[in-house]
Length: 127
Image 1 (cartoon, helix red, strand yellow):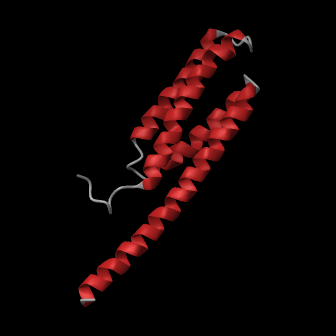
Image 2: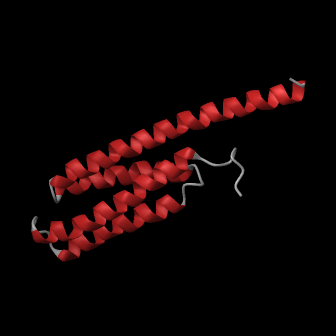
């Protein structure tokens, strides 16, 4: 069982956002081909490539550098709007969800660390 102190709420929330984003971006690929008349040679590598990257980065979130990659993926998802204008909306929603998960997760981690430090200090002092 994982120690409660080591469990990262930020990692869990951000991984969930990236996983759902991978589905949405992957499903945008046929939309780009069918509705936006983007050639499959452009839509497949961009749409499915971004979806695969979302899944890979979700699995890498144990490292702090992966969060930077997550930020870059949000820019990429919004940038798909230049090919399929609806992706400005979908990418923007996921960027907002990512930012919320990241910020709220960091806040929870900070507050948990402070609470565990206070708990440890009380235990050591014998209270």
